[in-house]
Length: 143
Image (cartoon, rainbow, N blue to C red):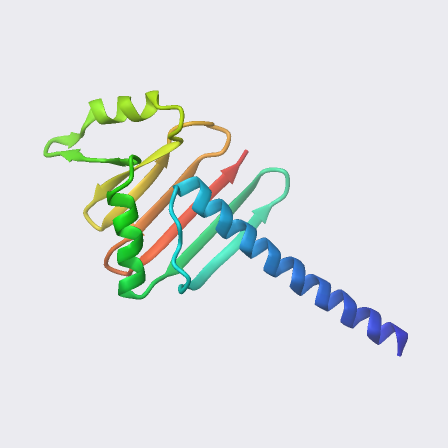
């Protein structure tokens, strides 16, 4: 009977730690991308792989109204780089890189938006907002 209770306790602790880790990863996503997620979304992927060098992968799916809130945050932020017809506006990128309060930037793509972290090369961050699938994909690598 005691062994069964110990296994039950271990299972409960593992579940609590797993839920806490997922919440921590979502907080990292919001901090790195400088956005506030809406209350409602589906977590398609929320995982960490590796040991000392690790990778965090998150994919979230949104309903239209919630996804529009995120798009609005991106477009209205100082982290959004307007794109010139012939490519990226290099003067805007230089301004962003000179601002120490900005750790990366968003740019428009054919299928939505992409985020690039321009500081700390040991922890690269990439994210995409796919306007067709209404998803946010986030990848954080710690080297």
